[in-house]
Image 1 (tube, rainbow, N blue to C red):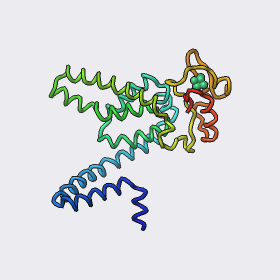
Image 2: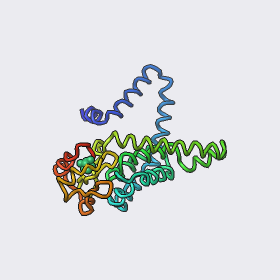
Image 3: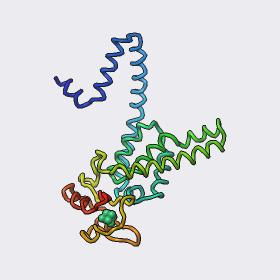
Image 4: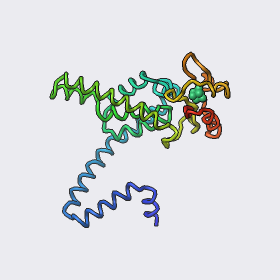
Length: 239
Ligand code: SF4
């Protein structure tokens, strides 16, 4: 019964076990190679993941929410995208190592666009791979592929950032106390000023954009406090 309850809460593991059982029944000669391959990947993960978890702990302790919000949060624009490309490109290790790191960055205010950019850069434009590419395919090919790939990644990041809101991704907010901060998605904001008029203590109009006021920017607040603020915006820019 305990096992059934466990599998109910870990659907992917249940599917994997089912797949192994099917292989064992339908193609018994393949079960040993399949187990060997899985063992190899498990071993690789056991070597990589402790380092990744240590890194996530360091990010948790050393990198401030304000810093992530400012440089990689909503409204960080092309500068944030460039930084996200650099972070993804300079990374080391397999792509699955990126997920826990991105999750912790997301909980600290990373925008959805920059999340997509980091993951995509991590997957396809790692710096050591570029050196190998130059060696085998030449610098001109590498430079052209890199420029087109980075452009595509940034465009895709902004498009997904437009389509998906941070609060739609199930990540606990940081702020130490699991509170969400109010963020304005500059891609959606039309600077109509409705929110500024309704809640001037929260929102202020600049020359061509609307921002959360500096006093409130770093402040976390509960979901119950945040929701009415989010409803002020007819364009869904407050989240
Ligand atoms: S109401 Fe929405 S669109 Fe208008 S200024 Fe505020 S955040 Fe921007």
